[in-house]
Amino acid sequence: VKETNFTRLCSTTKILTINGMFPGPALHVHKGDTLVVNVQNHAKYNITLHWHGVKQPRNPWSDGPEYITQCPIKPGANFTYEIIFSSEEGTLWWHAHSDWSRATVHGPIFVYPKAGTTYPFPKPHAEFPVVMASWNKGDVMEIIQDALSTGGEPNQSDAFTINGQPGDLYPCSKPGTFKAVVDYGKTYLLRVINAILNEEMFLAVANHTLTVVGMDGAYIKPLETSYIMITPGQTMDVLVTASQSPSHYYLAARAYAGLVYDNTTTTAIFRYNGSYTAPQTPAFPNLPNYTDIDAATNFTTQFKALASKEHPIDVSKSVDKRIIITISLNTIACASNSCDGPNNSSLASSLNNISFVSPAIDILQAYYRKLKGVYDTDFPREPPYVFNYTADVVPDDYLTPEINGTKVLVLKHNSSVEIVFQGTNVLASAENHPMHLHGFSFYVVGSGFGNFDNETDPKSYNLVDPPEMNTVGVPKNGWAAIRFTADNPGTWFTTCAMGVVHALSSGKTCELGYGNRGDRKEWQNRSYKIAAAPFLLEPLLTLASQC
Image (tube, rainbow, N blue to C red):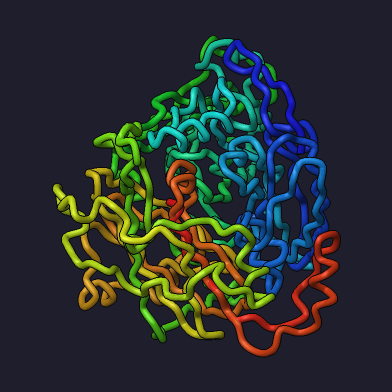
């Protein structure tokens, strides 16, 4: 990890990078592999890395979120991660998990089928990464620290990028625009990753049909579409056949709007090989409008798991416990009453009206060493207050989180769990919330708008072929229901993948455990060599209110 000068948008900015690259290097593995990565921190900031979507069976030591499974890697120090792949297959990604360092510290993970097996679709001729990210002219670490110190919203990004380049429509950017060079008649696999901090994105290729075949490291039934909508933290595997007249075509992406959004468009070029006169301007795709909620909903509600003999699913038909969690943006009073948030307050965020506070040492270490006073195990399994969460006007009583603290949710090992994430309109600030669960994938069994109804909504759940994900977009003023089996002992973070809300401290931790805690020798050595825990832990879900 080091700071590197990059020139974009006519100016040079120093950014955090891995090996001097933006985006960082791609990791290529096969299903079931184990990868060892040593991170040496040559930057001036603390850092950790998270392997987004990798379940890490019984290996929370290498999951990466700071103060959850490890203390951050300090400047001048190094740390070795052991990344254990299990059932994942497709596209995942890795990123920093400290403040906003993930803005530039991230990269793709390509998980290929095991030797002797193949894709559940004809093997593509070639593949291209499509890593979408945010670009700020200023120092992104200073931007978030300024926002946290003043209590207001951080500045918007100045551009979006595809594979590190803003594209033709931004100043001083045309020469570097990423180009995917294709042959007529061949089919290509686009490995799409939304590494953007705060925006869901529409993406399309002009005059070409896209076929989505996977997302979040799992296969889905092929879905033909003219565009995709992808939320921060998600990945998609998209097939596209070069079936048009040889020419240049824009691959373009722009925001599906939240409260405040960057209304610029990033582009790459789908360029055919051959002899032809290149157009002065490539054809541009018909992207949905920034606020087209119907386009977003029509796309995301079509996902269905492949659910084949070779790629089966195992969704629980019944659950041991249904947990309902509200997601809110909030305010906290400033001592001087002079912050930049609404009514001179400081912006915050919460899950079930609790705003997560990072502890002084990581929760996994505290659990292992039986340290008292680091966290509490009383995260509420339902909202403390019941009201019309999605009303146009929410009473002022719900503007301020009831508790600022480090709360965790303890789950019984092998229990069937359902979590319903309920969006709210607190502060009249309803937006989509991408919720990510570490240590597990889950099945999205239902979603909708308005308030979740405990009696009627479960009747419409898809328990036959629900999509398997690790990050779900909770719709604006709506809800999403997920199911999973708590079969991965450890301490696992549950958080919002939206950078601005994560920074405002919204999340929880889930803790799974049983049995004795084993030999401490491995623990004593883990500062320089990570290994799977030599003992059994109960699943401890850190539902940190960082959305």
